Structure formats: C-alpha cells, structure tokens
Image 1 (cartoon, one colour):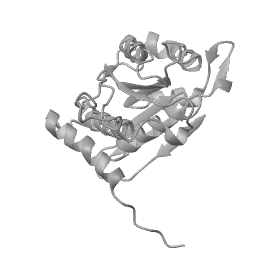
Image 2 (cartoon, one colour):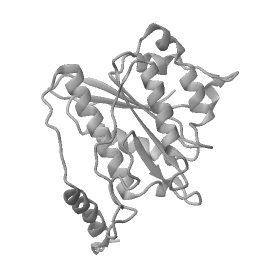
Image 3 (cartoon, one colour):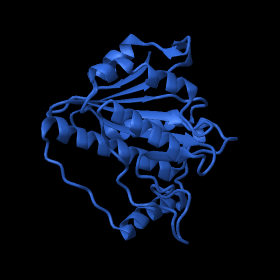
Length: 244
C-alpha cells in the first residue's frame, strides 16, 4: 500500500479525505499531489494520498485490505486515473471492480466523491473517464462534487496556463505532453485548478460531515481571467539572482 498521510492538528472537527489514483508515468500522480495539497489547506482535514499499484492486481482483481479499510473510514474519496484508450486504466478498473463489497453493503453511501484524469492529447476523450468515475460513485451511493471554476483559455487573451483551461466541470481534467516527464506534468493553471478542486472538496466535506459554516466562493469571468493572467505575470517577472 502506497499511502502518504497528511495529518495536521486543528481545532475544527477532523474529516478524512482520501485521494486514490493510478499513474503510469507519474503525470497523474503530480495532479493527485496538488489536489491533496489543496485539501490540506482546509483546517481540520486529514488527507491521505494512495497510489494503486499494478502488483496488487491478481488474476484481474485488485487486492489491498489496508487501502479498503482506509477508504471505508474516509468521509470523501477522490478518484484519479489517466485516460487510456478513452477509459480509465486497466489497473484502476481492477480497483473499481474490487469495490463490489461496499457496493452490495452500501458501505460508501453518502460519502462525498470527486474525480480527475490526465491525458497526452487536448481531448483524449477524458470526459468518458470522468463519466465512468461519476457513475462508479453513483452506483456506490456517493455524492459527487464537480469543479467550481469558470472556464479558461476560451478567448484571444487566454493561454495554456489558465485556470480550468480545458473547461471541465464534472471533474478535473489535465493534459501533459507525451514526450515530457512528470516534472512538467500539466500546466500551472492545471495544477492550480487541482489545488482549488481539492480545497473545494475538503470544505464541502467539512460542511457535509460537521455542518461547518461554508461560504460559497464565486468568481466572475473577468475575475477568473485576472487570476489566470496573474500566473503569467508571475512567470514573466525577473527572478532574483541566487548566491552560490
């Protein structure tokens, strides 16, 4: 079991958010890490990052009792997979099929859920993966949370680094060039969108579980474009020289 615990002490009642994903070349893992970082910004949130490993798939079915126990006690679960041939990866599908027990027992009913995916192409039929993940959550009786950001890169002044630049709301979409390593996964806008999505899920989990007061964050299209522009200005700013 590959689990990274992000425990933090807070005064607020603690909720548990688990990000469970499969990554082939590390690109989807980077997206998962940024989503988890966003969730950790919310006081009272315990975040777990869980990588689904191919070696845990035996005879076509995934097995890891420790991960299943963690998911059973999580308040929210975020599912992530690369988009491969218009579907989740074979490894992640094996994990999904292993959730038959919580399906028949309704063990995950009314937990919150979300999803994310990564592909090399701009489209790659990523929507099919998010639909697959959302249906999976629905069959388990979970409550789905989508992305709350305005669309980016939809006008002449937009760019690849805009927030929600692929215009996805069912879940988080990102794109990485196939010839670049995981250290250049996604774009600055994609990673910021991941962090904002993680924070959104954590805040809604606090509201759902503990009836914590929640203030809806709203942003006009003009404000969204200004946010994306600030990322480009940061990149363009001269860097201070470092001392050897």
